[in-house]
Length: 97
Image (cartoon, rainbow, N blue to C red):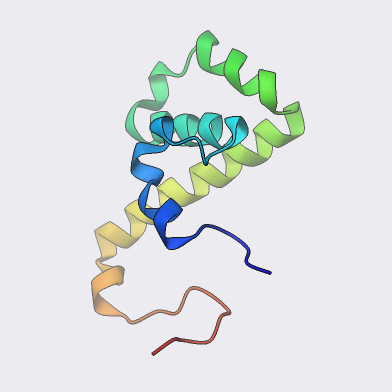
């Protein structure tokens, strides 16, 4: 059984709003993550309404924590130039190739 995103769907994440393959929850989560990363101070009532329409309070807390962690780690890796300095296998999957 395949889990996660196919290569095609992964490539479509950047344009998630225009792909029916993503669920409403995935689209709202992606929009929240995008806004959190780009302009977190602009997250307002409209976004909270969208979040509450498809997620519970606990799920919103989990999503916010995860997005905050990922944004922070991405910035830390950029500052430290880690992604280019180390060949890190971030998955438990065996390397392919």
